[in-house]
Structures are given as structure tokens and as C-alpha cells.
Length: 64
View 1 (cartoon, rainbow, N blue to C red):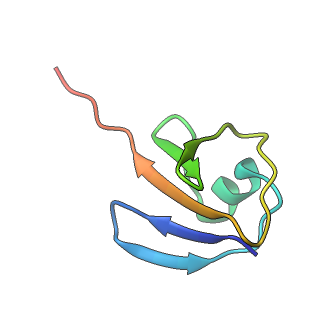
View 2 (cartoon, rainbow, N blue to C red):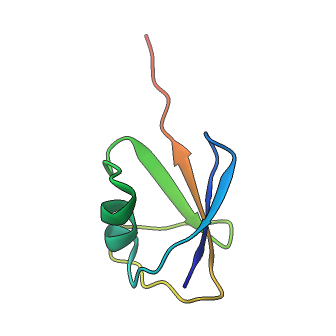
């Protein structure tokens, strides 16, 4: 099960998910409001996750 670090909340959680999309669903996150990295590389929704992966979820900040 991947270890997920939520940057905004500075929280580490262990969540079982096979893809980034599934992880977002379990965390109730909208993929248009966050970015994710796996082992410090940007990833997309279809990326497969392994138990040894370290996933960081980072909120997207925009303004005008």
C-alpha cells in the first residue's frame, strides 16, 4: 500500500490504491485541484502504484 503525503495538510497516510485515480477517489480529491508526484516525479491519473512508492499530493494554487 503506497504511503501518501498530503503537502497542504502536512499529513502522512497509508492508503491502498492501485492507481493515482483510485487514490484520488479514496481521498475524495478533484484531480483538477491537485498535482501528484511519485518518488519526486510528476505522475498522471493512470499511473500504477506500488507499496514502495512515496506519493506527494500538492494543491494547485492560482490567482489573478
